[in-house]
Image 1 (cartoon, rainbow, N blue to C red):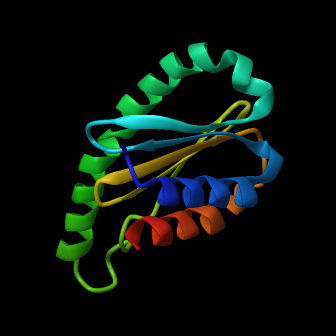
Image 2 (cartoon, rainbow, N blue to C red):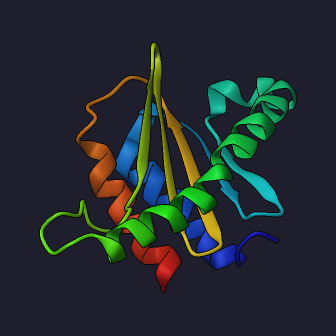
Image 3 (cartoon, rainbow, N blue to C red):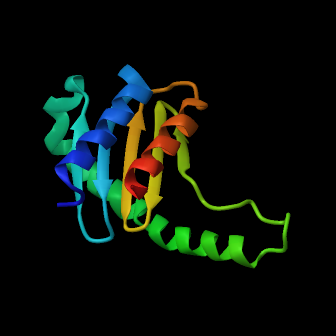
Length: 134
């Protein structure tokens, strides 16, 4: 189990509320395991094929655990006012949608969406970070 059932439900609910009908999928992952927690209804018939694609996505997004450590050390070593601050989330833009990754500690969330206003990602990612941290 990647996270508790209650936390999984809250993370998926946050994504569904924040991204609305543009949300395609939600994946929860750790360095060792992952689960496809949500697939939009019009994509469910494709779920077996999606699992293979999602497995590749997770393998790539797991690199974020290492990146998070690197960014954290940069933030701590930079002179005052010369840092970007702490890592918060990643958004990847594609021709037909977006991928948003949030990592806190040993838990990550990936949400995929259709095309939409990119500003929405900050609100959703901030809430996901708070839920995972609690």
